[in-house]
Amino acid sequence: MSSQTAARLDGLLPELEVIRADFPILSRTLADGQPLVYLDSANTSQKPQCVIDAMVDHLERHNANVARAMHQLGAESSEAFEAARDKVAAFIGAPSRDEVLFTKNASEALNLVANTLAWARGPLEVGEGDEIVITEMEHHSNIVPWQLLTQRTGATLRWFGLTDEGHLDLSAVDDLITERTKVVSLTWVSNMLGTVNPVAAITKRAHEVGALVVVDASQAAPQLPIDLAAMPEDERPDFLAFTGHKVVGPTGIGVLWGARAVLEALPPFLGGGEMIETVRMESSTYAGIPHKFEAGTPPIVEAVGLGAAVDYLSAVGLDAVHAHEQALTGYALEGLATVPGLRVLGPLDARERGGAISFEIDGVHPHDVAQVLDVRGIAVRAGHHCARPAHARFGVQSSTRMSSYLYTTPTEIDALVEALHYTRSYFKL
Amino acid sequence: MSAELDSLYQEIILDHYKNPHHKGLRDPYEAEVHHVNPTCGDEVTLRVHVADGVVADVSYDSVGCSISQASASVMTDLVIGKPVAEAMAVHEEFLALMQGKGTVEPDEEVLEDGIAFAGVAKFPARVKCALLSWMAWKDATTRSLEETP
Ligand SMILES: Cc1ncc(COP(=O)(O)O)c(C=O)c1O
Image (cartoon, rainbow over all chains, first blue to last red; front, side):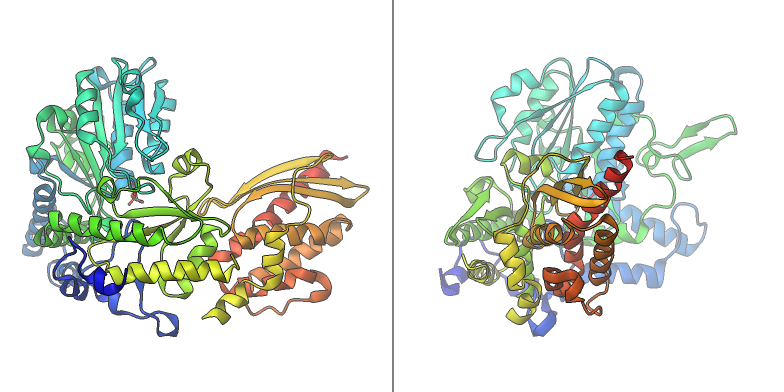
């Protein structure tokens, strides 16, 4: 396909050049004056000027600690921090803004749930005979915390396998989700295979047996519209985690949304300032949500940046971002299919997947692919993308992954495909 | 553009990558180690057989990029048949080359085909690839010596 056809791809964001201009890094050049072709957004996304400005403005004009500073700056900083919570709540359609907790990243959000469940007593208690269900396509951040939980409590870890096409193998659902199941934790969109999982159906099934559902939305939040309040209650997960830096926000901040009743029933995660009501030397009482789970000085300027980020995405429109990603993913899949010996891992239909495409090329190791691409200014990821079990499932040790985002153009996909042809010729294939 | 790549992917490296020497796991051995590069997933299982103070055999099974595979192949060529102390000195020499950020002039007398990795030292992300099997060899050799009284 020539770039002329590419420019007419259905679903592309109409103002793509305007959007690109919002991201200052996209206009920088690399060694030898090469333009940057950034195809590593599933790893971390680039930041628009408005996010950078919001953070700089906060540091320049409003910096103070939150909640505990009795002065004007303190009030401004607290207001900005809590306004960020409102923005994030709106971004995911949280039924209540108090159910939105700020963490360090998605990993910490998932660990918060797994740890507090390990400590819970009463109805949420996890112990021997109980089962935790995950999937073979999880990011390590949604595997290891559950391994730790089961090791600490004597519960059993089980998981959904994958079909050859890269979907969850749902044929085993009745065997996996039973009255012994305490928690089902799964990714909404796979960071390796790109697969979009049927979160609503699995949640419904898990709720029928009384299990809690944790959704890792790290790859979904950047590209799918999410409206928790609009979901039927039995299909709405109990927890949803994502990370700020993949939704055009800064690093150092993540989000955990949790249903109020569950958050209130769980014990605290970290102890410290801000999460308490009264502290006596013998024991303490705790603040209500969300503060109960936010010990110590929170990531204030990061929250401000994240608030600006989700506002930016909402202004573009998540439906439009999703359509753009699908158009580019379809275009990329067509382009990749022209490279001899290239095998895509995961669904081949763009409608069933997100914007991350992992692939291997016969005869060239992913590291070497990424190296050749890097010399041409094209940034991709090579390795196991923190999803080693999913790679093992497909009999590969590692893969190369391209991932697009709302600022990616079809011309950049063309550059990737051309560079992959070049890579093969460089290694004399 | 291609010159930069060529400084990394020397012909010698690509030859060893396509036709690795001494690959496969063999008996006898006193120590077997498994080393991984957690950031990229490259893995090597490596066995060392030491007899009479000499590195009698090094065998390995590995998955990884051209640099890590070629490095394992070159390493076995260099250490097999050498007295342990001499092989350790070669290891030191290679380590110094890799950690020299491209400023160390390699000694062909000592490193033979290993000099082809001089270019790798300029790519910080790839230094670990080149060192994976060398580190595994050192580990296994140290253990072999502990095994044999
Ligand atoms: C699906 C998925 N889950 C979790 C994470 C972890 O995010 P973070 O490293 O920001 O905690 C990532 C990103 O690396 C991811 O892609």
